[in-house]
Length: 157
Length: 265
Image 1 (cartoon, rainbow over the protein chains, first blue to last red):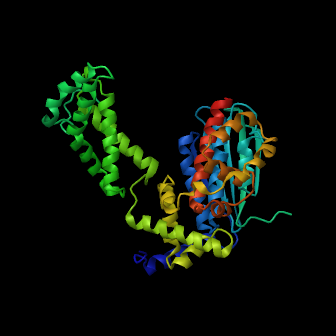
Image 2 (cartoon, rainbow over the protein chains, first blue to last red):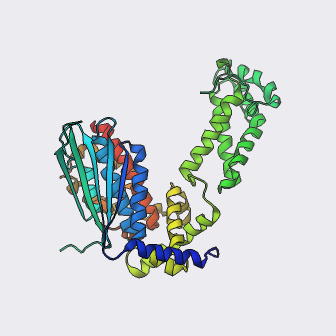
Image 3 (cartoon, chains in turn red, cyan):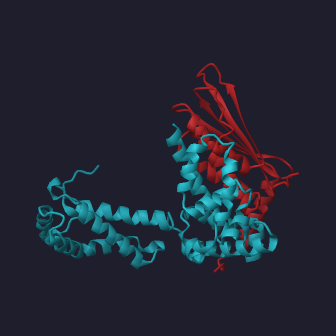
């Protein structure tokens, strides 16, 4: 079944991964997408791919994927008309951070007593939402969700 | 929109032209007229080659051919039932997209969403099995490198196999791999929810939505978000794979999100 395995491929993969990991530096991925639900699959795929290549365990990979989906869906719901969603991933050896931001017409931050927020909080190690006034042109408010998923879930206590 | 001219040579064949008057005949009969059933059956039977032809066009995508024929036939029956001969469109122009739609829906609901090579499906299956074994041994979900080591394949191949899961949108394969697990008792986790929900906004909206979920979906959701269990623990508890739990959660969360938005504006 796995007879198609060939050694060069594996070696290449190994060296690429070493280079990717680096010593202790964070690598970044910046994504700008239209703030439409149909674009969520792109962000999900990137999140899962980053976690996979960091050798997170499968629960963590799936949790990050679900969390990024939930956070970005929440923001897309708040985004004004044709503004985009900016999503930045920061990959470190022990954790992946994501910060996503949209331009919103009002200064309302995502509610933290919502079901969606509860889901987010359960999926990642840390999550917070902030808002800030946007530049005068085009005006409005920048609504941002930041989350952190660590390699292994810390034992509470 | 394609104009309904019937000029499309691919979907029009003189073999079926003689059947056209039967649609008019059937349309003139009341629903309860026994002659209607006879005509309906004749129209379905005579058009069966169309369904078979469409099923063949999808037959290299990994679904059993007989299943596809069955689904295409279902599409054909729907087309016969819904066709309105007085609209000026010939039956095949109406039926072909209807049948194709049915087959596509079948792929979307129960099969691989895009064409996935057999090698990847097998990879997916062996990875799925390895996840179960390693989770048992490690007491947690394995990492891609652990899976690679266990299966004696490269990590790139593991990535490929895990990515293939994303193409496979439904849980039907997992459903086939586990025994009918409706008998597993899922009930005891649900009681916790009520107290937990006390702090959640729109709980009065959320409760009926949760109640309407299929029992397995609800249980997975509750155990993950109110019971603080990992996907791997949930998988073991209810007897499905971790990948299955992952997919159930993704699907259920997206659905609830939509329903909550609709319900709360």
